[in-house]
Image 1 (cartoon, rainbow, N blue to C red):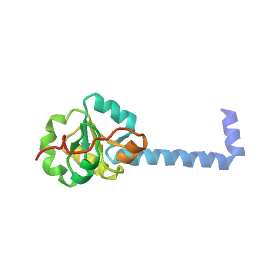
Image 2 (cartoon, rainbow, N blue to C red):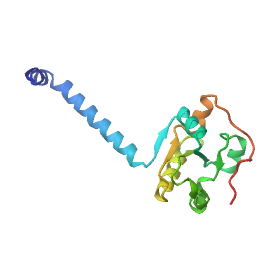
Image 3 (cartoon, one colour):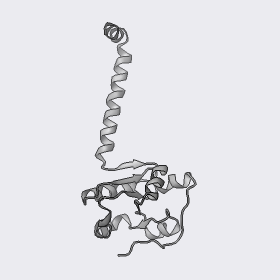
Image 4 (cartoon, rainbow, N blue to C red):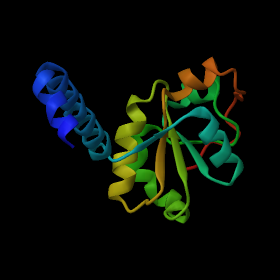
Length: 147
């Protein structure tokens, strides 16, 4: 323990820099948790989708029909509050929310959590990251959610 105190007295700038970085890491983690959604990568999204999770695409209908994840349901972000009752059987099941770049899905995840959905996650980077990983997309509107 004496060596620790000796180190801190001889290297105050290094100790201060380490303390500042530790505080920043804690602040960033708290801010991420306050957003109300967990981010997952494409591999985790595939694993959840294969395990029976609902994949919810919150882009506009035209974007959805141009290419979406297999078995994804389409409910545009602006309609999520009005159509959340169609998803009530998924309140205790995993729900993976995706949009084009990952920004709109965070707001939808927060709204769904407020409505009582307990296992909501968002796809980090949205469908842009899905495409970068060369994962398959389906065209058309076969799995589009009905009003």
